[in-house]
Image (cartoon, rainbow, N blue to C red; front, side):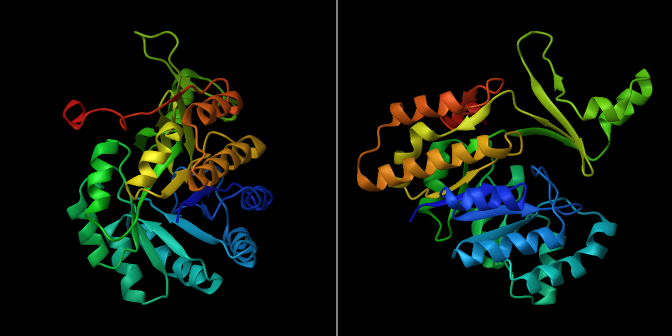
Length: 303
């Protein structure tokens, strides 16, 4: 059964996403969740969880930060509240945070999200042995590798089929430091869209975002595996993640709806990849070209 996971930035968008095919909502907040479209507090997470459960859908809460001592100290009451809210799963990668979760014994399942570390079936099998009910694949893997890995595992591998890739993260407020150094107005500048540019490519745009967790630099294009969805399903890769961290509001809802339509078309045996790719291109944000990242490359060319 194909599952569509979508980030949600608000209660209103969560409702629209559930109405348009999302099976699981991905939410979270400061200081435990990284690279979210919006940082939500526990009350908001609770409201979204209640809404999802009323529709027999699920919620995953991001706890994917690499945690320092101060975060670990705050983690126990946060997890306790999430257990009270009856969220379905956590997305978590820090071994210390996983240790705390297991020690507490809360009825919270977790999906292993080790970022760039999740590159082999053996590593994912290790975390499955520690209780993980699934895993998030590294974005640097190829589709060939993912297919091989999924065939070796009982737990599902979550694959990002739409959205940007974070190519650099720093815990420091790099934009604030830059504007302090240059004498600019950091708050006004950070409120607008900012980009880095490759001096060898004047058309390149790498979005740079600063939030409470630090500074994040994203790829110049959004991943899209729309053209490969049928192949993925045929090989057991049927857990799809759509990331709206740079695509907000109704525009992201429309994209999720199109992937849901593609899912139903695959299940009905009527899927035509070119048609769906063309339709996605029409609703994709103009400043964000689509690409396939590492997915269609040969493993020998990547590693």
